[in-house]
Image (cartoon, rainbow, N blue to C red; front, top):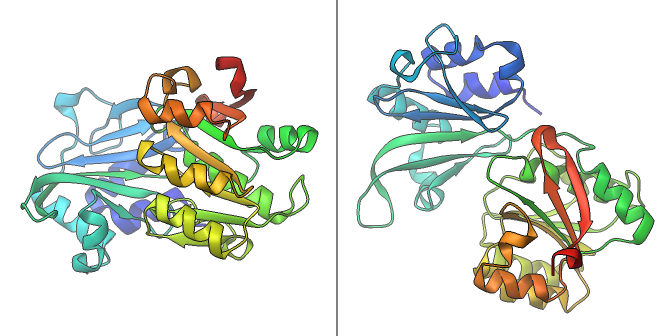
Length: 295
């Protein structure tokens, strides 16, 4: 898997890449996002903290921070799409560009009225790391009490995708448990890159609801893994679960308690599809608990 520095040099204009590369090492190693805004300060996200930097990579107040020019935003988009933006139009219309190494670049700006962008003025490059044993607490729970549906909960940018990558790798490769048939519904092409692709069956670039249904019907999975489940996927999730397939998914929330306030997500929790809940903290720390404790 490519290093963070390789990714920076591949996708960022050289002036910006140089500045980010000169960040203090302890901050650089914790980077999860780099955000460019046209003619506005560049910011980075490290352990949930938004930071601004100058051209020499020194942390500084916003008024002194390095800014991305219009030309640098365009260059970044050209690099992200490998010089062929039209091949990524379907993804861009949904507000992101997938990265070959895993992760994605979110984009926003002025829409053109045709589900596309007339101008892109902000780019947020999300960096996902492959930490093979990040999901070990969940594997220990599975080894003790059997594999059960699991919902991974945390606010954005706290490591949900990193955790799911690890779970996919450990379950499919037989690390700590006998190897399982694992399918990944990878709508945004974020989970599969960076892990041993031959270990899992991957359906990428397709909305999660039909992807879950298709994988269930055609690939006889024991486990399906997907990212960022929402209310619109509830029906497909419930249908998959009725076939005996175990689902491991993530959701943007502070925990199960907050999901119980959100319409169909509440229905999903009460359905019993996710007997286990994983909450994530800083440094990819994972806590596994029984969902029924919150009901």
